[in-house]
Image (cartoon, rainbow, N blue to C red):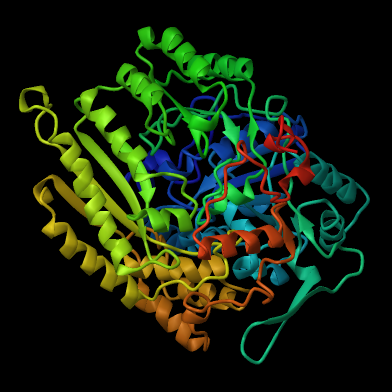
Length: 622
């Protein structure tokens, strides 16, 4: 029987001890004596959120297929255990073996969301690994960062040995082989990192330097070692149906955020929404084969006992075999009580037909994401959704029995006016009015419209990466204005308005758009007690502001400043396939309120075809 790293006495004092004991269904078990490489995958948030992340499940499966490698996992200890571990000097440990993380060869940390950055430092400190990469010795694990936030790694550059830019299925075998060979030859940590720096997609910050102008902008970004590349080109897996995908996903003992089998049907997106970072960095679009997905659905449901299967992608409606796949899943698994979850669907006749088959219409709600209240602003952001389509989708849903609708919008989009903001209230009311055109005896009770607004953050590698972000005061002013306009609507009692916290958004903007100088702010904020920043009850805005002040850094420099199109941006040394010229072109089209057709309608020459395959090579789109 395994010896747990925490005593029963400690486990009984913390919330949800199952977060820390491992031993879940389908957990990998290996004998350490037979292993050359120990790799720990980390999601820097609480267990329930980390266990819901598909990326870690894929990499966990991939690493453990290697006979010479044992991949284990670690998540951020919740605040109660964090306190105990510091008091009792208990080193952070992996769930599988319960061994200290500091004994591993690699610690791979998923960078999914900017507001987890202080949790990364918590993981390192509790693992007794030096926080700064420059302070690590031959005895410390190699710390790797990957995931969407790695596309601007600069705010975290000082804490990581290297960043893996792109999709994990492609280069990790080469990296692990290099590590084994380097170790066998008696090579040092630096020797290995120099070799890694020459693998496509790998960014080793220690080999690069940044110089700044007097106004704080970047003067130059240059390498300090001639042997490493000038530009880091992302890794892309083009053959999604011939690569690894878990047949036996991990099954937790406690309820997690997404307690279901996840079937990733495609990567990338054809839509080209100008605010959407994922839609740009995951290009080109690549689909998984229908037969591959059918087989994986069988295997994963059998291996997990889950009662729900979710189809994952940025825009499920654009998967070319969606209808065949969904009807297959319904026919095969519905009789066994398995629900089908379909996020990211456009509401059309097919979607409504499917959802009526897989959901209890009276209990479920439908989700629309118009993003902007006016047609003008939807054209600016290239949403490709007209009011006519939105109202028709809502009416079709109402006629099919639904009476609950969720609407998602953003405040602070580029060129936004108060008229655009008021459009959110007007559109919400128009949808409610559609419902009340149905004869009373045919309605399913009262309609419920929930309109939510988040605040817009201009992200790297989007056409809006140059625009200024609204200030906190501007965001709050628009939020108050919209709340007032909601109250003026005829159907106000049928509409509920939700909004996000502005302070959190402002910090997200700095961390998303920051350069290396922001790293010291993250360090100081963490040392001042900032942790679990995305959890509102633990977010310490004042401590963050103090850290900015003490480091003489103005957060507004990174957010509420229009950037010149020729300015060197902190992430310019990364090649994501989508060219800077294309992003500039799209930015100018946005300002001109011009819509760009989606990839299947016409090729817009974004540059992603350099990876080969994808929509770029379908008929007529060359």
